[in-house]
Length: 196
Image 1 (tube, rainbow, N blue to C red):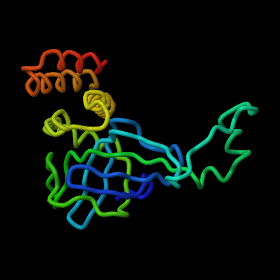
Image 2 (image 1 turned 90 degrees about the vertical axis):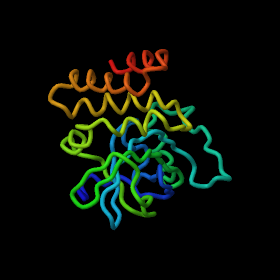
Image 3 (image 1 turned 90 degrees about the horizontal axis):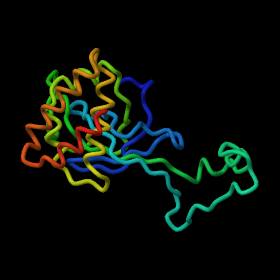
């Protein structure tokens, strides 16, 4: 695993998703991006579907501190302790895994391990993972705490940047979505509009 791209650690995990805590405040990967973690069986790939910054102490609510300051950066300069009192976490929908040398676009046999490192994926990895769009079936059918179509569209826009023909990739993805959502034309049209 490429330690240069290490950004977080798994703090909660289930078969279908995991939550990761960022090492640096507000340094999460973007919505829809592809990330990976590793366990003893191989790499687990997932799509970022929610990002949250919150107080580490659940009984202590964050309060406004910048009324007389000029910028957001000034808040952290005047209150350096905030970086240790706040945390940025992101939730990841698992969409595939590598076992041995084979890439699978379905859930792994086991969830991600707690405290395993989470890394961003290089463009080559994103391109290789999204050559097949079989993972879309997992993504469009899941129920999330955020609008799944927003996550799906963000994922496809993000992945398109890894391909030599981004527009061609989005057209291919649109056709796959048409197959998956053919009977739900309203949802399909809404999703296709978000791919621009």
